[in-house]
Length: 118
Image (cartoon, rainbow, N blue to C red):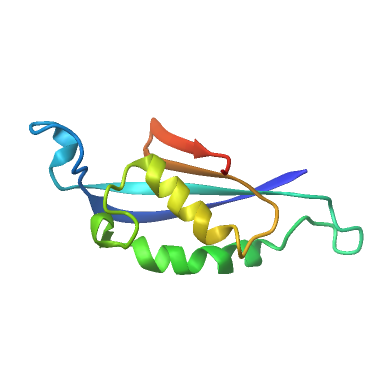
């Protein structure tokens, strides 16, 4: 079975590797949405896979690092594409969240990235 928790944050960024004149090369912002998926057996005693509060606690340092920040200034996100952001989030969650199966990053209502781990 799999559960997920959704998080939101506001951040600015620009993409330094795109060609001059590309609209994403200019500083702009997004209302990011991130879904964190965790898979595992349902604990027969508690009746859940993981406490949602544990997912919240694991994500909190990430939220603190990116919310209302310029992503390009966050170590490891110098080229903050959705793909890099999803991998960056995974790397920080995996040690704290056993059973992590997927990180979904949405930078707009209709575009994003799904990362299922290395």
